[in-house]
Length: 251
Image 1 (cartoon, rainbow, N blue to C red):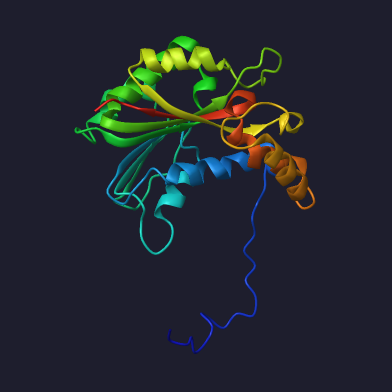
Image 2: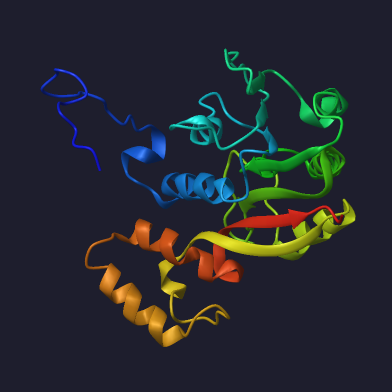
């Protein structure tokens, strides 16, 4: 390996900062789980893929993850949101702001007539009425190529807690029924965060419960409860406060 002869530039220090807002100020489990969802979604996307994200957000974090670095990890990306979005200078990226995907899905499909390889919507479906959620799922199905994947995350309603800014939180059976009615096959669910009181105390088919207790105890020496909630959430989809769903349009 060739030796690097000098630093990249002559600065002594770089003053880049990570800016935290809302839950980020306290590293709440809900804030942290967003990062893991984006990195998980990246696993399903290759440099050949055409990706549609519904509710991409004004900061468009997933698009930045897919196009940052030495080479892009996506062929084309279309991000739509009800909020205003700044346009992109990249031919690879298209952002449609103040855009109602439920009502205007056909406009998006014209951009990729053969269908998208991956459709992503993270923390979106709970922000609309049930009838509109059903329409969105059908629109996602219609936007995918046969064999394409939809990645969806949303809270799991436990019958007690319901966020004030959520119009409708779904139970797992309720959402599974809606997803299957739209034509999808559910391949797997992962929890994204959970109440730590359940860790090692409820059943999981993914690992030995006794091992979970040992690992949780060891990790808790370094990680706080919010981080532990994220780390073990994927093992307990049925006891998680939030799920990420992998759904496929049959080939």
